Image 1 (cartoon, rainbow, N blue to C red):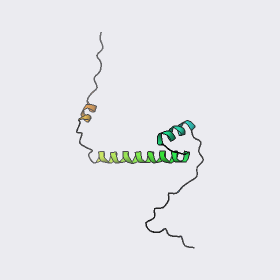
Image 2: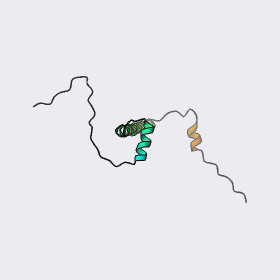
Image 3: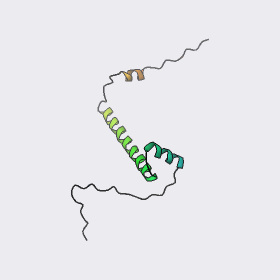
Image 4: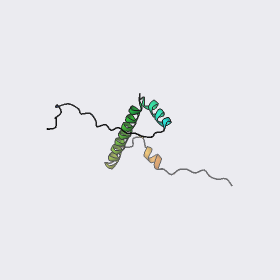
Length: 91
C-alpha cells in the first residue's frame, strides 16, 4: 500500500514522543507560573521552545559579531574595556 500524501498547503503536526521523567516538582511549578502554562506537558513544551529560541538568538548575535557587529553608539564598549580603578590602601 502506498503512503498517503498530505494535501498541499497543510502544515504537518510535529512528531510527538511520550516520555516518563523524574522532575523537581518545585521547579516544574515555578516554570508553570512563569510561563503561564496550564499543564505539565505545556510547561515542558514552552520551556523547550524558550531554550531553542534563546539559542537561535545567541547564534544570530554570534553571526552578527563575526560580520563586524553593530556600531557602539553609546560608547559602552570603551567603558567596559577600560581598566577598573582600585581603591588605594592607606598606610
